[in-house]
Length: 257
Length: 257
Image (tube, rainbow over all chains, first blue to last red; front, side, top):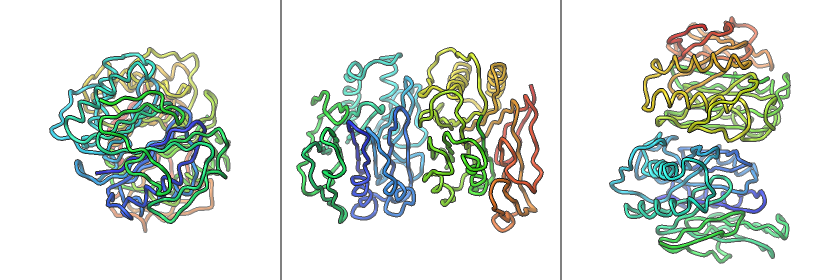
């Protein structure tokens, strides 16, 4: 299994604090030694940092922790391999361009007996996760050859996720840099931080941050993770089958299948 | 204008030395202050480091210089903007998946009055370079809906490059991680290093490396750059209209239009 990390914010926000907690689980407090990756959107562009080695040992991970990249949408992942060898091409998140936007995807879980119809988007590596991402994009592209607002393609995303969930465990994060879509099959939790901000303490490292001193009163920042990353805040655990569409830190629409 | 850097090698090789030279031109010895990027293939996966700020000031560039990533195919670029604002989505190299491989592209030059036919691949940013890359992929995809050996699609690449050259200056590097294709419109030079290896001295920084101590007798490493990066070796300047297909450091096939 793997762990997911997502962020949606209404101002460019750095995710150093949450990333520090997640990285500890990559071979430190957790068993996820088989690589990690994180994608930061900057405008329509995306920065992707990845390493097939354990995040606690990764030079690139240390750069990301030291270097406060500010973003309104982030997708991160640490991996414990179950399908596919440990190599860069099997490392999440995966990125594809569709309709002139970079779409980014990370998955937690495992799909059994998964053989999607071939399409325009093809997996480069050999994980079930990347195959599902390509299938998802192929379904959207078949349904909407031209770009449409996310609200219009949302039913296609939800239907696709529902079908993957029938094949196994499928928790996922998906973004085009503007919105963030989350689907919970078994495990996903979120917290929205807004004024009045307070201190937060990581569960996985001896680090506390006082968001009060790093924010303005209008900031809204949602963090989504497989397991709550802090132990002094109230995270909400999503239910199986629950999906949400986030935009600038807020839920735009949600449902449950 | 911009500067290009490419590498094709028969063993995973680090490009720290050449990259160090190129980075100096990004606001140090050269005027290319508008971002830089470099893509390293690792198997079928690709690592992309980019920054829209000057490479001499870039924290990410320092990581890449410190961290000897070994690769058989590399494409790098430093930018002096002429079309499109300075931002991450306009920063080369550009990456797209086609046929289950990541294709990477960087361009030096400028195209005037360039309005390619829309297709499946679309630009995310607003550079003529990314538009040309998407058009190139759209032409390949239209001609070959299923993946074919590079020798088969080579005429399509050359014809596309010839058409872009009619619109302006079009020096480019293109790779799928296996082969590297180079097209010279006005300026591109290369050097192939093989045994007996000797010392090389950068033109843009006070750095000398003795490749003898870093190589084995069977290594073949070709470096391609807009301008020669060293001042004590014999670089070959390509002619206008000349193209080459490189594989593992050697020219597989070449021609001139």
